[in-house]
Image (cartoon, rainbow, N blue to C red; front, side, top):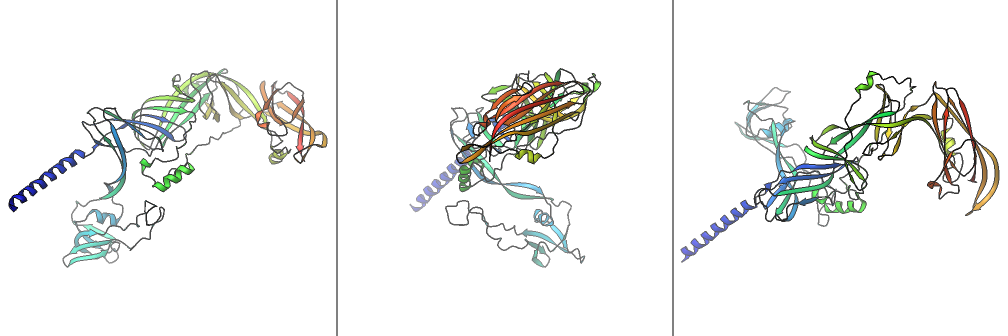
Length: 562
């Protein structure tokens, strides 16, 4: 009876083991090779990725990734309804990788089991034996990832226990010896097949999707917003022709995120509202729970870092343009064809690029378009307001001191293309020569944009403002006394060039405009609504013949805080 009972138990155990083995084999995850099918690039280093792959037959558990670390709330996994996605689990796993040995200690670790001669370089001696083992490096005590349990808080490390150098276990004819691995500065292997690579453990994030009824050929898609890839536009503006400028645009794509292979890329112009862009998703496993909650409260991850926005600085050079001959140098300008139609999504515009292949850590140059656009040349003199928000006069004038007036030789472009121009640096050329660089600001179709060429040293400008009349303590408001002051300004401009010029003068002032000697366009600016004095922008447009001088006067009245 006991023997029969033992046979039944043995069979039951064998059956249970077999079932568990089959179950384990069935649960073995399959890897899904997804690739980036589409990516939309913003200019601040954020991008929206869409990856796609094909599921293996009857897969229940599949491994996805690796991906760039997604922003919170933007990581989504989708598949056909018939495949039924049950869950997606993110976890840390330990893998092995081979790396080159870069120190004598690493070389010894890579050759455990091999025969070698150890020797001190200072005594010329040697010890023949076999490398048996080495003690692994003792890491600092692991941080307690859960701040709600006993143990060190997140961000605190325990002292390095034990310390010291690793121990080397070396088998010689005398027996097993143990040495400080740093004692020997020289090693000679008795066989030429020694290893120069070391196998080490690394931690990676593994993302597993659990499916209920996937069939062969079913698709799986992953989308997310992440940092690490951006685009930087720039323009080349050739004004060799007197009426039409030749505008060429290109894009640089800087990729530090993921490999792109024949991907569709949209270059986005615009600034969407991405509230949690700087908060890393918990799926990225970069922060513990406490750090994630802190990130939510302040809108930025501890590991995330701020997006770097490049500032474009204008360059100026002394240049007096001569004739406009159709020199052969201008024929070397690039021609990338007409602008692509693109796509409008709400207030964003997308420049499309097809079949982009760009590996991680590569930078790509991509032509966008070349178009002829109408332009006009003019000279621009901008004069600031000398009354500040506290209704006090002369603060800015005192800061500027004797700084000479700046008159800029500029061009005004009209966007007759089918696409908007995004803000980017613009290099200006004339007959094959570089004549300046400025920022071409965002310009929608049919809009206008002004680009500075160079400071006009052949156009002299001078200005003065003097007090004409003052009524002391004319107004008392909320306990503050204000004087009513009448001011008169004089603008003198002289054209020393050998050709006629068109000049636009913009003067911003706070107060009531009383008189101008030349007709001016007067615009009341909204930024003066909360001040005692309204803010006006006066614009005069005049033409000056070679050698001609003109004088413009204006008067205005303002309340000045005592």
